[in-house]
Image (cartoon, rainbow, N blue to C red; front, side, top):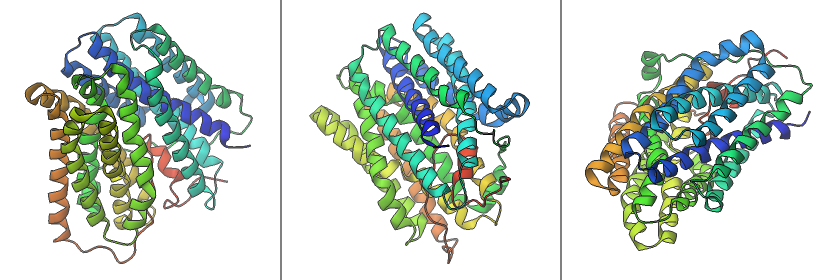
Length: 405
């Protein structure tokens, strides 16, 4: 069976998820929701994501992959429409938790299927195709926000349709279902012992990323641009990150990864400080600054995972990687809550000043750790891993194949 139907489903889901987050932030601003509440929308999503990563495997084990995917796709589709029917913050927060859980379950099923259809020789290519599909769909759907009125029912309806269509390839597949996905728990003590830099890096990146993903659309509107301008701005960050994956990975495979991570954090902090200034010049300057910010910020999570793999014991990579992802999710819950307070106290620029401060802390932490521990003599290759579910890490070519064939 070709993998393209599964990749298409994954791309639709990731694209819809990204656009929905941006759309809700824009619509919340139009409706006059406080910035604190808008930030809580992404926090609520990450609450659902963390719960889904932890508990969704039990649903898959009990009723199977196809039924689980169909059920959670239906729930996610219904939740998307429900946002347009009842425009009320508390109701939206509940829907965001439900959406996060549902997307975690659906991505877990898809990623388990992709892993089942891969071998040790092909998993790297499959993961690359998955990432290319991810970046392409998310960028295109963010840019499409300019085509719709955020206050209309149409955009919510189209998102619901796309989520519903994503279940068709999975529901009609004749391929035998893969084994139940692994439920990865957080073992914070073990993660810290494997790599303090990876531990801190996952947390810092989660704090920063959830801040600009949740409040970026509000930031754009606060600068006086139309709400629909938020989509292209978010797309510029994603595009910059996509372009940076290969060169950053090439550098990290040849130099101390902590130095590369620290350099990216310095660049991200500098670009974050410049973003509010660029926004006062022109929208094109804002998009350019967003792309530069994405170049430095987007690869940071992959660098932390690669550094952890350099120090993990053989056979431990899957649990360590999944733990870092869940740590990222827990930190993201906090980041999306702090960012609105920074904007409330310091104005629109406060968002990226806060983001810059997080990356500055990461820079100093990396610098201190480089004086305490030498770089390993041999390193695993950098892989641009997705931040979806722990099951995605089974596609990582650094992880030994553990599935029965």
